Structures are given as C-alpha cells and as structure tokens.
Image (cartoon, rainbow, N blue to C red; front, side):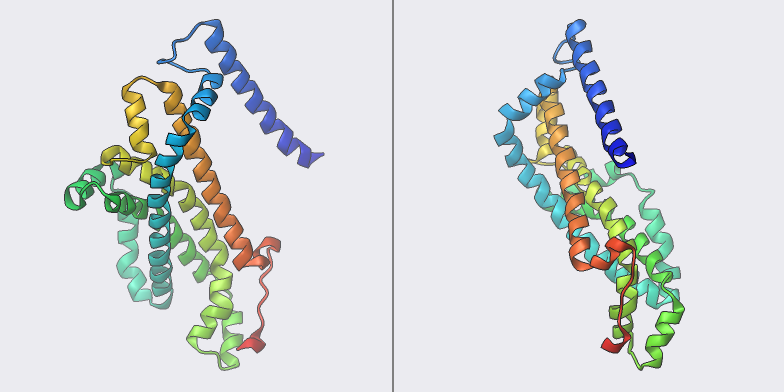
Length: 259
C-alpha cells in the first residue's frame, strides 16, 4: 500500500499541475509567446524531434566527456588526499574556493582563451562536476573501518591491495553518490557553456528559439534537457549495480583470502 502511494501521489500531483496549466492557458487565451500550453509543448517536441536530437548529440558529447574527465581527476585527487594529509591540507581549501567562482564569469574567459569549439564547454562541465565527486569520494575513503585495514595488513597486504579490496569498494557508495549528482549537473553545465559560446547544442538552439519568442520550442528543449539528465543519472546507477552489486543490499563483501 505504501509503495503504491509513493507512485500514485506524485503521479496525481503531476496530472493536476499539467491539467490546471492546460485549462488556465485555454481559459484565459494566453498567447504562445507568453506561456504555451502543455499540448503545444508536446506538439513542438514531436515536430522538432529531428533537430532536437541533432543538437542533443552535441550537448551529450560535451556532457559525457566532461563527466568522464572530471571523474578521473576526482578519483586521482581523492586517493591522493586520502594517502597524504599534507596533500589534503594543501589542496582542500582550493576545492572549496572553486565552488565560489560564478560559472557565468568563467564561461566568457574560457571562450576567449579556447575559442568556440568543444573545449570551453567541456571545461565548464568539469568545473561543475569535479567537486561533488571528489568530496563525496574523499569523505567515503576517510570513513573506511581501520579494523578491516589492520586485518589486511596482518595478512601482509600492500597499499595497492588495501585500496583494491577494502578502500575502493567501501568508498564506492560515496563515489557513486557524487557521480549521480555530477551526472545531473553535467548537462546543465554544457547548456551554460553553449549559452555563452557555441555553434550548436541544446543551449544554442534554446537561445535561437527564445529570441524568436517560440516558447513552445523553448519548453520542448527543456524537456529534452530533463530527459538526458535523468538518463545519465540512471546510467550511473546502472553502472554502480554492475561494478558493485553488493551496494544494492547495503552490504560490503570482501575476502581477505584474495590478498
């Protein structure tokens, strides 16, 4: 019963909001350039699916590349901070500072320095995605049980084996928590980059139709952005289940005999 309620109640709210929106636009004859009805948005989405998919491929390329690069550097730096307290003390404050710099300031600078191709957009995605992954993974690594580490050391495990058998599997929960957040951010980061400097992409297309007051197409573009963000988030969740199936049950299974 409770499980059905968790599905039915959000669905009911969604139907009420969309239905009320549609009725309001029709009843008061709201102009398309002010507020399109949900039916007009769906029509625009279907009619412009080809061009939306073309721009989506550009945005996805920027998003996925930025996410992959930020994940690699986040893992490396997180392990480095876990290995060395001096390194963590030296670099951690700067990780915090990066989150205080407005993206809208960095975007034009990246465009001036690197042009209008993929690189500026990828850098913005990296800038937005790196922090949640690095912080989540670093915190998870620091909370690994010392008893487990000492047990492995008593069996003669080296540093690599300790990370392989205990630390990384234990820290995977934090790593994938950060990745899920970053996977949702990355599309938004690419869109911001495309607003500032681009020749293609969903952000570029959104600006074009917005300047033409075609708000039904703007909302259709928003729906595509939401779709790809959710899809990337689900992709990360699927990867988590494939690589670390034990996390599904909240259990951590490891075998010291594999040392």
